Image (cartoon, rainbow, N blue to C red):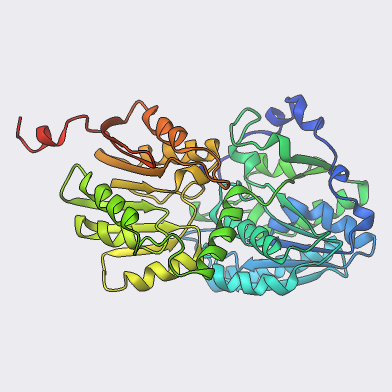
Length: 457
């Protein structure tokens, strides 16, 4: 995931405006007929997200008499870390600002505030999912959420929740849009993560534009200093704020996204069967797992990461070689099963996460990718590889093991996955094992063989 300093100016409006693709974007009306929307539900991770990303859309729908619900998920209290203002006071201020802002967008707009602690959307994912579920707008409705590629974890997770629920509900006639906010700050027209093919332009009429500007002005705590202390500087830099005063909004349309689709698919797979691939009983799986562990160049590692842990069987086999082991999977059902399986190992942590979009911080001595790479599109897997190598210790190892036979839900094949790893100039292939059905590679920043590492030669 991209990183950025939200209080810095960021990319100026002029840089984006200079690219002819922006104004040449297809109109939003090509994807959504505003006159046919029966209900609008807008999800916001923080107070002001709804106005920044979709204020004009909200104002236009409200003016046409469409029932509109705005859900602000968190309390916004983390906007000023170290502030001289107490958290309680900031929560109250931001709640009042949201009330005023949403009322300015439309007097009849329903505002729902849940007060989840700011920055904990991922941790509260299950709770938020169940609270969003009954709010899905139904046939003819429009669900609007933060763009999952926005570079902010709370935005990503809330967007994933929306897409997941809409996919599970399979509601015909319900449309989902995503609104970027921080993209305009950290991105630039030629940035590889800009989803140009999926962007749609929505010009605002004078009434909607005025309503959006007035609503944004209501968020004084985000636009003006809370005090003279450096911790209380405005969150919205004036250069950044100009992106939302252009008389138009931009939305992301398209399918539910590769990772969310995978998550929902894997949730259903694990819910149907406790051991979907029979990894605990098949000799093929047990043998392959033993080969994977035996391929480790070192007997002991400090910090280990496993991406795509499923129900935690390989995790358990890796645990004796690790001082600390973090295992990740996109499926909440798989994560719960893995946690139960590994509860007796205090040095093992299992989390639900999409490593390609939100790679864990810190340095790892070993990263294991087993049967996961081909579920990612090539560009997403490329970003994951970059994050892995960026966060790999100077002598760190990467183990990759993948099934080589074709499957209908693979986005690429095992050859492509291992070739992308091998193409990184910072990695050296120190072991290569190929069979008819799988390939097992060990890459390392340390090019030495195990014999050389251990002093045998």
